[in-house]
Length: 125
Image 1 (cartoon, rainbow, N blue to C red):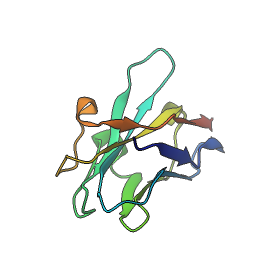
Image 2: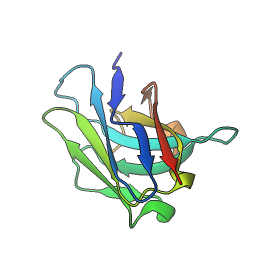
Image 3: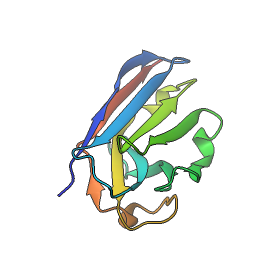
C-alpha cells in the first residue's frame, strides 16, 4: 500500500503563490501517473491537474491553465503543483492522487488508486 504525503498548503493573499508537493511513501521502481484534485466546502471533489507516469504529458483544468503548473520528479516519485495568481475561489482542500497503471494524464477521479490526506489552501481577498 502506497501512502501519499502532501505538503505546501497554507494561507496566502489573493495574487500570491503556493507550491504543493506530494511524495509517495516509498521510492520504488514503479512510476505513477499522478494528479491533483480539490474540494471546497459543500462541493464535490474536482480535477485540477494531472501528469503521466513519464512526466511528458500534463493536463491542467481549463480555469487554472494559465496559473497552475504540474511537474514530476520520477527519481523521488514526487509531484508538484505550482499555483500562481491565486484567487479566493481557489480555496479548498487539495488532494494528491496516484495510479501505477495509468499511462496518461487523467482527469477522471475514479482512475486513481491512491489518495493523500489532503492539504488546506486558503486564499484571502
